Length: 445
Image 1: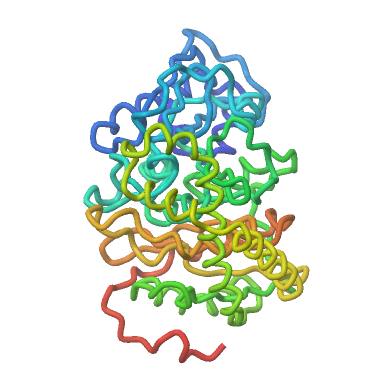
Image 2: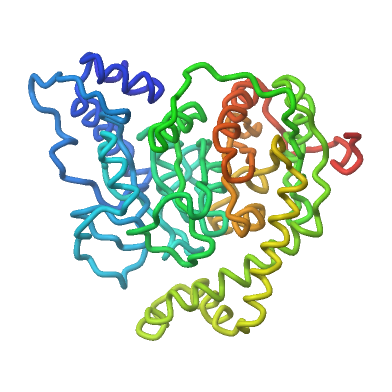
């Protein structure tokens, strides 16, 4: 009986709880069963909650009117959950349980969500990978650092998980694991109880199975009304197509997917043009490294002093190089960020949205690392909201994701567009690694 509701969209699950067809506890228990069933191979979780709301009470069917009633949430293990330790993917952190929830977790509980436990993160949210496997092929990386959250959602063991992003920590795992993802605009929600690396760059985010689910959860959190029917994209919307190749060479499958964007934009009723902004993009990506390194070195100064040799080589190098960034270089990077932000406001206007690759291509082999975050660096430095749209596939079956980027305040439009695009992406044929098409720069826009 519970499986009937377990695999439906979040809005339908909540409706079933609201009308008493299933209790919140029964729904949460079904999720716990799936988590434990697949965890031996997936390795997405570091700790599971023991709270009573995850255990069904015999005969309980009382409706719960809250907008996330019975919806299970996984929480990335750099975010505090009361009663569970926050280990941040490192053996040097304390195993004492957090005394209180992070502010964002507390908000989800108020809305009726069930916190199922903590998901795997890379070491302190940086590059050193955890044990999590990609749900589509266990020999491939799930990305980093929101790897456990993305894999748990991509494997359909949970409908919602929390992630964070400082560089490409959410967009890349979402793309690699076939999940919908949303990076919230920097500063748009309280970060109390989130153990990040950089106050300028750290942002919270959501991972769900579909963009419609993202839209529902975002609407619940913000208090806006959710519409179960995807709305038409306003005719004045322009998609600014970003090729990403100014930062990274794209895999043939991703290049072919981007070639579909002009046709897809026509189908959703939006205009399109090539994003001519390479000088800003490359400068922002470089300045992101400067800001991240400088602030991470300050954030982690005590940890480095006390446990330097116990940290991974990747994190040691970040903190070493970051400590050597001159204060003047850091200040100048922040000034250039503000200049670029104002320039982007003028370029996008009221109706512009950027669309581009969420990752370089399909998830690479785990032996090569977690993949490059470079395609997210410019937008993260600007603090912009991002929606990752799943649905496209390589011929190997591995997922491919596109990212929609807008200015703060454009979140409902990003989600509405993402819902319509996802429907179209799921109808596309799969993309081969053998690319004989003309290069993107040769296309006429």
